[in-house]
Amino acid sequence: MHIARSSLSAALMATSVRAFSPAASSSFRSSAAISNLSSRTFSSTTSLNANVLKLTEPAKDLLPDVDVFIFDCDGVIWRGDSVIEGIPETLEKLRALGKKMYFVTNNSTKSRKGYKKKFDSLGLDVPAEEIFSSSFAAAAYLEQTNFKESGKKVYVVGEVGIQEELDLIGVPHFGGPEDGGKQPDMGPGGALPHDSDVGAVIVGFDRNINYYKIQYAQLCINENPGCEFIATNTDAVTHLTDAQEWAGNGSMVGAIKGCTGQEPTVVGKPSPLMIDYLCSKLGLDKGRICMVGDRLDTDILFGTDNGLKSLLVLSGVTTEEKLLSQENTITPDYYADSIMDFFVDENAKVEASA
Image (cartoon, rainbow, N blue to C red; front, side, top):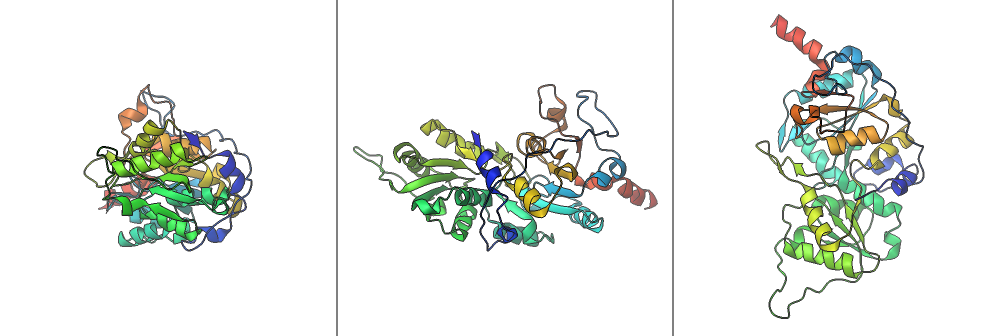
């Protein structure tokens, strides 16, 4: 896969702050180089992997050295449509300490506006300006590459989140949910006509993916000269409910890769798009940012590749056994059961006095 790094990194410094408003679009230019991680000392080690440290004294090891927390959503803030225990109170405590927070999700099924509604429905008071989705990243990438000026269209394998973000930047598109019930003619002599004006196929998580969409996407990529294959993310699994893991967008992307032989340009984590914007436009210091997520190959890699501190939580898809195994080569600065452990000392005092 191609991580959208050099072109996106070069673009983001020109993005206006209003680009984070759900009703706004954005434009881009070059950003500063990634800073190096400073050396860290934490309070405990593990027997299986001495490079992975469990957070036990956050008041000493974490909170004083972090000004900004970037949180993944699925598996960190919620699972499916259920808030993880203790999250509202933890976010309130972080705000009371003056910490800035941003919420970055690889799930493209909703736009930023849609995610704001989800935060509200779960009783989480999060401003729209703090929310970023991979559907926004896909639209931002097209805007940076001046796709609109090409006069081409986008075929969407995905849901309404991608469509809503494309509408905000005025890029014509079709597909998505509207193609959910379609079937190609596969009888004798059957063929599926496709639009030769499609200049990009965006593949995001799609609960209604079908053979029609896969065939249409491969025709555009294989037969339209210069048609770009863009993936919002390649996550292997996702949390649709809190009962089990579900096949993620990596399965949809894999289907298109398999029939085109093409690698996609990936715009979600671990691509640096969102972090480069935050640092360049809001004046953030990468050395004072901590990425918090539940996935090693997206969230933690996003942190380590972009010069951030990183913390893995075990409230999502990654188990402690996987994290600490000798086969794992992605190492966060530290890990915790959930972000409730940011205030483990305070919580223990409350329990002791109860």
